Length: 350
Image (cartoon, helix red, strand yellow):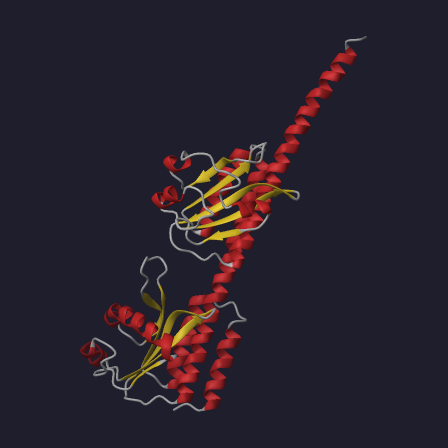
């Protein structure tokens, strides 16, 4: 068995790898291989949630030593393991061919698996997967071994979160770049806002997005652009500035978790029929004055994170700048027209 020095050396080696150019998949492979080498295991596998599915299962993200036939059946058991880990912090299986907590005993026997140790992969206090170590001989896992594998799994969570943050930065940079190009290419507010709603919907992975601006009396929010909403929903009736998530017009972002049950939401039945469940509503400002709202509609229950709210607010600010710039351009055009007419009238005197 490994000693504490081996554990420390392995954790240091994996930690140093974070400062290199290794990609996420390479880092996860390193973690899995390190678990096998240091703990003298037969195999190891890191399972992660498949977020593309409505009822996500855990699928292999990195593995060493397990056959493809075995892995094909393993994700369901990994999901069950994740649920048990929520209460215990780990699962230690002494005899994988008989333990009633797991299934497919014959498959494990055929694969040559005797004992299994499973620990959670965490990101921000949420279990997003599990790291499993498989041994060829029956083993009683020590506290040190459990703590070591847990530490490796934490490294895996860090690698995944680091990759997510890098990808998010790239997406945000591209989003702002595309918005800037659109604003520089046109002074047509409707065209700019149509592009904005599409880009925001894709970047945030939401069902739909809309931009509404206050009318002259500041009583009605008039639709300027939308993406992902049906014509039936868009023609449901006027949107009152006083009745429809009115707090956003005070300059504060608002998250509505249950649109059909929130009394501060207008047209709740229509939203339910449209498949709208959660809403993020952020103000659009021109200087310090709120002139409208940017709304993101989710078709599934969603808690928008602080980062998402901040990003949506920044995009709404960009939208406000685009509207202000377009307005100033139109005013300048009108002034130029008046100036030309004045010059022509002066010339006619001579």
